[in-house]
Image 1 (cartoon, rainbow, N blue to C red):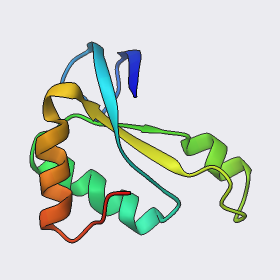
Image 2: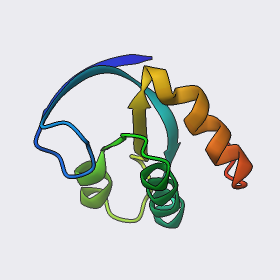
Image 3: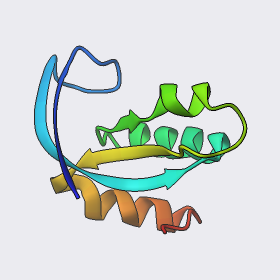
Image 4: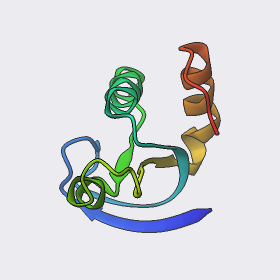
Length: 91
């Protein structure tokens, strides 16, 4: 699934204006897994964007809206390999 995003001034991106095709890397409700993935991607200098942060916070603890991590098309293979090497299962 391609999602076209135009993002301006996000802290976790290396570009002040970032416009690129991105793919979903993972979808989960586990906040510790999300934090671990963000750390791994940051350490490998892979840009990412976290979707549904506010939706998952609004719905409470019923886990209806999982958070999603997107990475640029060109980094999806490397990002998947990093997650698998660190024991994170991809659905």
